[in-house]
Image (cartoon, rainbow, N blue to C red; front, side, top):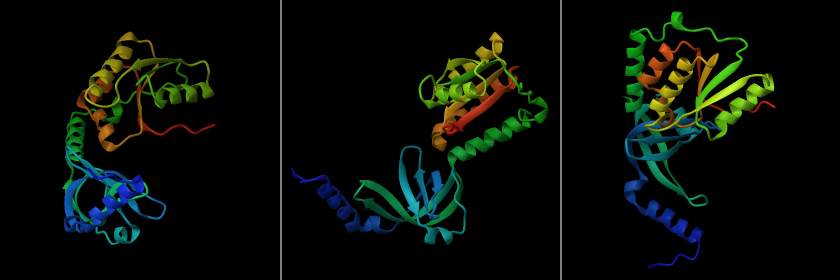
Length: 241
């Protein structure tokens, strides 16, 4: 067993090992874009993934300006570049020099198929939209009982009108339990006739984390619900003072 005298020593060894590996100096890899963010300096930080793994990537402004496409979340792409290990933070990432479009990724394709199906069935027709009451007396919220989302909703509403009542239906907002529990919450408020409007909410997250809300059952539950329902999925923290 080899003893590294410090974290810096270990990270330096890892960085050198990466640099010395010819297979990692320049390669291409296929994956689906996730979490694509452009910095103030026009560098793009993103991830690519398959159904089992994910790796962080960056493409710097000069290489990004030469791209023939505009990368988007959900796009299936081939990345060309090399692997880099940033010693100070121990961060492993691909430094991309080119991105080629290979079409829609699996999740993006699933979303488009579901959207077209529901659209053809008329679920998105504006004629079915229910008016939101201007002054609801009681608001039902379907979301997690922990985290910042419910606190944010309560604080924001109370600032505007402290006389509103808020009822929470706790539900998972990620993973396999999300769709059935959100559906149960919507149906509960609709059957109980105890709220004037329903909010389905969860905080921000990656495309994959939010994808559980792209569910046919949730869409049908909202469509069949007699109570006006508002989506607040992927919301940012309220910074209004």
